[in-house]
Structure formats: C-alpha cells, structure tokens
Length: 74
Image 1: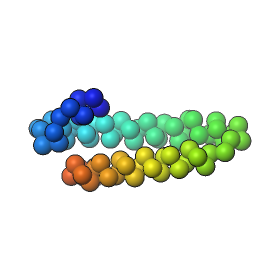
Image 2: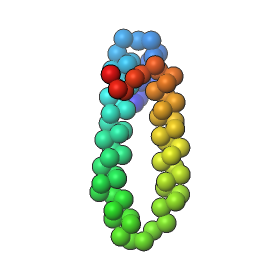
Image 3: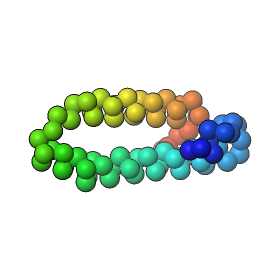
Image 4: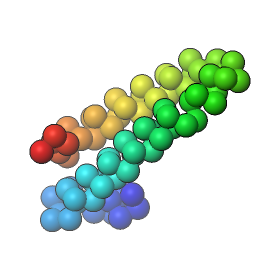
C-alpha cells in the first residue's frame, strides 16, 4: 500500500499492485466473514456499527477501482 501511495496510477506496475491490494483485501474480508463474525454473533454483540463501516469501506474500494480503471473480472 505504501508503494501505491507514492506512485502514479499511470505507472506500469500500478495496475498489478492495485489488483494485489484489492485481492488481499477481499481475502481478508472473506476470512473475517467466515471466522471472526461467527464468533461475534455467538457473543451477542451489536454488529450494526461494524456493518456500516464495512459498507463504507466497500464503497471506497469500488470507487478506487473505478478511478484506477480496474476491472476485477478480467
């Protein structure tokens, strides 16, 4: 992520690095959904604030993808 922050999206490696970051993030989200959230549900915690934060993060991720011209379905 630090590497991406210091580079222009026009640079040759930016697309690859952005894809790697997005894939890593999506993997992390999947892991949280399968491992972490079931534990939270068992603890009877209010997950509404966490859900709102995740929705905001997803919207930002989609925005970043569109700004970078990245199609994750290639």
